[in-house]
Length: 108
Image 1 (cartoon, rainbow, N blue to C red):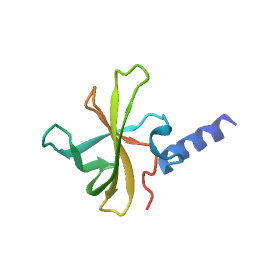
Image 2: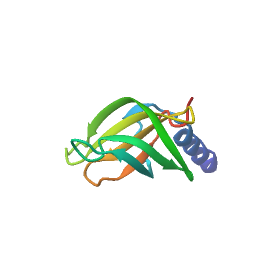
Image 3: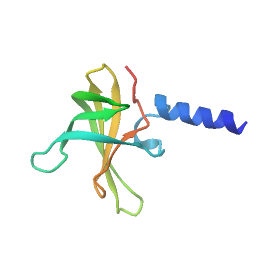
Image 4: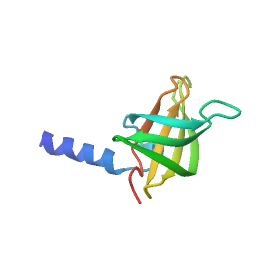
């Protein structure tokens, strides 16, 4: 039973079982190449995932969330990549770390 539950949890995280930031599973760390204009890491241009560099063709949605204590803020980007798929990536503004978030990741 525990093995089945683990597989279901992994599958939900990989296929985007929940949309947007409501799913609070931890994201997978990724490397993002971003545009820095008025501020650093203003807009993602490409990211590396599973050994591939994916070019961001468009940013479909952007939103921010703060932790309950107000100490950490994350900026989320729903991006459309050159492989035809949509991904949610996030920047933790406190640490500067980028993550691939559970959500529509990998959906066409």
